[in-house]
Image (tube, rainbow, N blue to C red; front, side, top):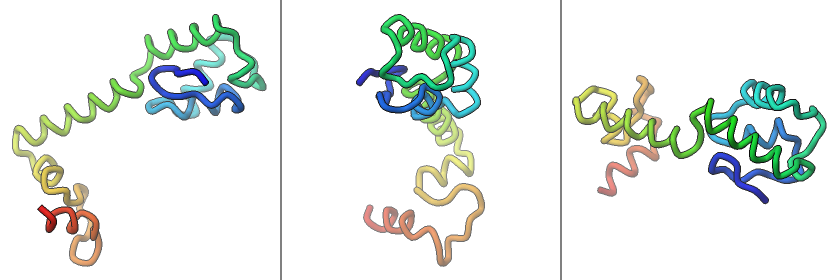
Amino acid sequence: MSYIGGARSVPDEKVRIASTKMAGIGPKKAIQVRYRLGISENIKMNELTKYQIDLLEQVIGQDHVVHWELKRGERADIERLISISRYRGIRHQDGSPLRGQRTHTNARTARKKKSEE
């Protein structure tokens, strides 16, 4: 089992499907990366050579924001919203729904977290 871009790759799956398991890589980007490297559509992860795995990791690392970088960026955006006291930042802080959802009867888990504090 190998790690590509910080995410564990599944050896029994096709390259296109296995690369979508990484945060930040969707089906379209997975197909683009596969075409760029010239990897066959039917080849599985455990059939790739060490060189192909290194190339795959290199291409994903250069061109795409994946896994920890993506999560770090999302967290930084939330922290910025909180620091400038935006409405969305305050809702993030409270653990309440952000996008106008009903809270009178729904969002029970958010209210539970809030009452435990």
